[in-house]
Length: 455
Image (cartoon, rainbow, N blue to C red; front, side, top):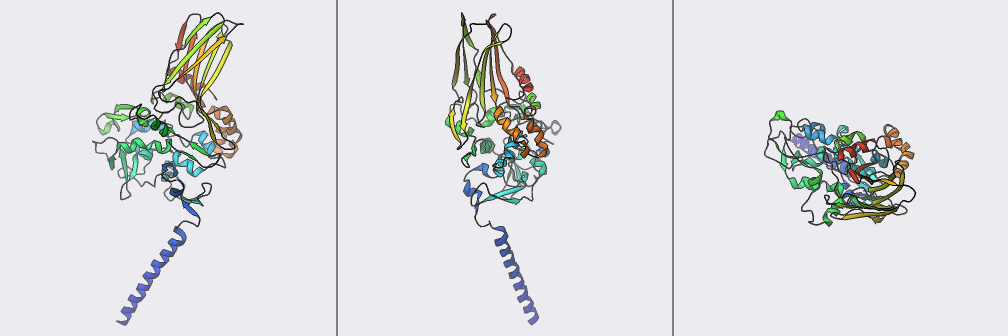
């Protein structure tokens, strides 16, 4: 009996020592370091401040990669591969910005690779609450294949249930997929603005000013209850999955996410119109009259289809309007440009100087009265460009391309050959003698844009 009690006694001591050891280990190694401040405290109620939690394999599918979704959702997957979302990480302009020493990489990546599975390290705390000193922890669930997919299917469509298991968030039910699914279209509708309404000030020069959601709210009900997908994910009648699975044709949505019509690569121009691109502007034919040596024109255009400002998103985007007059030899006798967009002063402190963007429902009019005395005007040409990258910024990127990874140096040092700076979204020509005009078709505009280099 004595030995039996002694064994129980020492067994109890052993268990107690083990519990104490685990507790000490947790206190020493698992708790935040001294001075660590949680992300939630620094950026409260900011969905862009942290990636989605790790998403384990989905029952019936496997790893929550787009390539696995595409085994059944073949048509949707093919559209997504041509999208801005799929190219959000490889985007040369983004990679150039990410390479800057001042870049808060961990924060920027939360929108360009928004799932924890895609991150080599995770940041849950900042030293002393300073965004410049993130406390990075190795991520044992890092998936390099999923990282390359950037804004992948799971960003919108996979979530965790109460038991920590992955399920698909869907908008349309009445089928029996091989994976768990919950139907909640409202959650899907509202997901876009987690990134597309990310606006904050980190310090004097580092400002993120994506305010599309704010712009939508400011318009109230003037466009009804529109969500981003109302325009950017056009409805299409088709099967959700490949034909051999014998599912019904239903109302689905395109997943090309075309946006403003300036793709991330030149070879994606041909996908813009099939993907659903259309300008939000209603552009009226040019009104003009010629009296002696005077030529007067007036151009009217309205933000008729977008429930946000045009342009929206990146504050450095703008519309560039060009008008020029040609003589009978095709030589320019007059030219003028105007811009509609934001003007920012970035140094010594970032601030918005002016904003001439076109509000929803707003009409802009550009008038000019030209005196042409030495040559006879023969043709009036009017063009509108959506500019994403100015030549001045591109030159800065070229000069600093040494700081990017080796596989990107050559592309960024010759960025005009790989990355569209702008797209031609409208062109009209008027023969002043024959009084005939030509408005270029969307297909013609795409062909012109595909061959342009630089701004």
